[in-house]
Amino acid sequence: MSKQVGDRQARFKNRKALSRRRHDDTLVLADGQNGDWTPHDLRRTGATMMQALGVSLDVIDHCQNHVLAGSRVRRHYLHHDYAEEKKRAWSLLGDRLSAVLSSTYEHPPTESMMSFPDYAAAGSLPSS
Image (cartoon, rainbow, N blue to C red):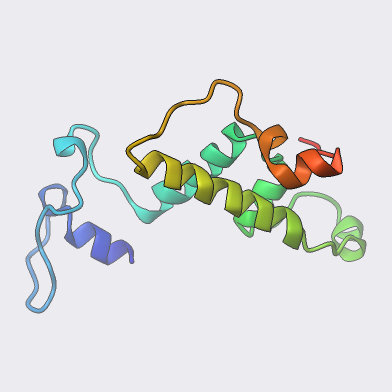
Protein backbone atom coordinates (compact mmCIF):
# COMPACT_ATOMS: atom_id res chain seq x y z
CA MET A 1 0.00 0.00 0.00
CA SER A 2 2.84 2.40 0.81
CA LYS A 3 4.25 2.02 -2.70
CA GLN A 4 0.87 2.70 -4.27
CA VAL A 5 0.34 5.81 -2.16
CA GLY A 6 3.88 6.95 -3.00
CA ASP A 7 3.33 6.32 -6.72
CA ARG A 8 0.43 8.76 -6.58
CA GLN A 9 2.57 11.49 -5.01
CA ALA A 10 5.21 11.50 -7.73
CA ARG A 11 6.31 15.09 -7.18
CA PHE A 12 7.90 14.05 -3.87
CA LYS A 13 9.62 10.93 -5.16
CA ASN A 14 12.89 10.72 -6.99
CA ARG A 15 12.23 7.52 -8.87
CA LYS A 16 11.73 6.40 -12.39
CA ALA A 17 8.17 5.78 -13.56
CA LEU A 18 7.69 2.05 -13.99
CA SER A 19 5.51 0.47 -16.63
CA ARG A 20 2.18 -0.90 -15.44
CA ARG A 21 2.31 1.31 -12.33
CA ARG A 22 0.72 4.68 -11.76
CA HIS A 23 3.04 7.63 -11.51
CA ASP A 24 1.06 10.81 -10.92
CA ASP A 25 0.01 13.27 -8.20
CA THR A 26 -3.57 12.14 -7.59
CA LEU A 27 -2.99 11.73 -3.82
CA VAL A 28 -1.14 14.99 -3.22
CA LEU A 29 -3.05 16.96 -0.58
CA ALA A 30 -3.27 20.76 -0.18
CA ASP A 31 -1.31 21.24 -3.41
CA GLY A 32 1.70 19.68 -1.68
CA GLN A 33 2.11 22.44 0.91
CA ASN A 34 2.59 19.92 3.73
CA GLY A 35 4.71 17.45 1.79
CA ASP A 36 3.90 13.83 1.18
CA TRP A 37 1.96 11.52 3.46
CA THR A 38 2.03 7.79 4.12
CA PRO A 39 -0.47 5.17 5.28
CA HIS A 40 1.16 5.43 8.73
CA ASP A 41 -0.04 9.05 8.87
CA LEU A 42 -3.62 7.74 8.55
CA ARG A 43 -2.96 5.44 11.50
CA ARG A 44 -1.65 8.31 13.62
CA THR A 45 -4.55 10.57 12.61
CA GLY A 46 -7.11 7.89 13.47
CA ALA A 47 -5.51 7.36 16.89
CA THR A 48 -5.46 11.11 17.53
CA MET A 49 -9.11 11.41 16.54
CA MET A 50 -10.03 8.53 18.88
CA GLN A 51 -8.16 10.29 21.69
CA ALA A 52 -10.04 13.55 20.98
CA LEU A 53 -13.30 11.59 21.11
CA GLY A 54 -12.49 10.39 24.62
CA VAL A 55 -11.39 6.83 23.83
CA SER A 56 -8.97 5.61 26.53
CA LEU A 57 -5.32 5.24 25.63
CA ASP A 58 -5.44 1.53 26.51
CA VAL A 59 -8.23 0.95 24.00
CA ILE A 60 -6.43 2.99 21.32
CA ASP A 61 -3.30 0.87 21.86
CA HIS A 62 -5.37 -2.29 21.45
CA CYS A 63 -7.02 -0.90 18.29
CA GLN A 64 -3.55 -0.39 16.85
CA ASN A 65 -2.35 -3.83 17.97
CA HIS A 66 0.49 -2.32 19.99
CA VAL A 67 2.51 -4.57 22.26
CA LEU A 68 1.60 -3.19 25.64
CA ALA A 69 4.13 -2.17 28.23
CA GLY A 70 4.27 -3.95 31.53
CA SER A 71 5.79 -6.94 33.16
CA ARG A 72 5.85 -10.35 31.52
CA VAL A 73 3.74 -11.58 34.41
CA ARG A 74 1.05 -9.01 33.62
CA ARG A 75 1.05 -9.92 29.92
CA HIS A 76 0.90 -13.59 30.88
CA TYR A 77 -2.15 -13.25 33.14
CA LEU A 78 -4.20 -10.44 31.59
CA HIS A 79 -5.83 -11.71 28.42
CA HIS A 80 -8.94 -9.59 28.00
CA ASP A 81 -9.17 -8.90 24.25
CA TYR A 82 -10.99 -5.54 24.51
CA ALA A 83 -13.27 -6.65 21.66
CA GLU A 84 -16.32 -4.65 22.78
CA GLU A 85 -14.25 -1.58 23.66
CA LYS A 86 -12.47 -1.70 20.29
CA LYS A 87 -15.77 -2.15 18.49
CA ARG A 88 -17.16 0.97 20.21
CA ALA A 89 -14.00 2.96 19.51
CA TRP A 90 -13.96 2.03 15.79
CA SER A 91 -17.66 2.79 15.54
CA LEU A 92 -17.16 6.19 17.16
CA LEU A 93 -14.29 6.98 14.78
CA GLY A 94 -16.36 5.79 11.81
CA ASP A 95 -19.26 8.01 12.86
CA ARG A 96 -16.89 10.99 13.15
CA LEU A 97 -15.36 10.32 9.74
CA SER A 98 -18.82 9.97 8.20
CA ALA A 99 -19.82 13.28 9.75
CA VAL A 100 -16.64 14.98 8.51
CA LEU A 101 -17.33 13.72 4.99
CA SER A 102 -20.94 14.83 5.04
CA SER A 103 -21.86 18.31 3.95
CA THR A 104 -23.78 18.97 7.17
CA TYR A 105 -20.91 18.45 9.60
CA GLU A 106 -20.89 20.81 12.55
CA HIS A 107 -18.19 20.77 15.22
CA PRO A 108 -20.03 19.93 18.45
CA PRO A 109 -18.10 21.54 21.31
CA THR A 110 -18.37 18.72 23.85
CA GLU A 111 -18.56 15.52 21.81
CA SER A 112 -16.85 12.68 23.67
CA MET A 113 -17.30 9.09 24.72
CA MET A 114 -19.92 10.42 27.16
CA SER A 115 -22.18 11.00 24.17
CA PHE A 116 -21.63 7.48 22.87
CA PRO A 117 -24.87 5.59 23.68
CA ASP A 118 -23.46 2.30 25.00
CA TYR A 119 -21.12 3.96 27.48
CA ALA A 120 -23.67 6.53 28.58
CA ALA A 121 -26.35 3.86 29.12
CA ALA A 122 -24.00 1.61 31.05
CA GLY A 123 -22.86 4.52 33.20
CA SER A 124 -19.24 3.50 32.92
CA LEU A 125 -16.42 4.96 30.91
CA PRO A 126 -13.12 3.27 30.22
CA SER A 127 -10.32 4.79 32.25
CA SER A 128 -7.69 6.88 30.50
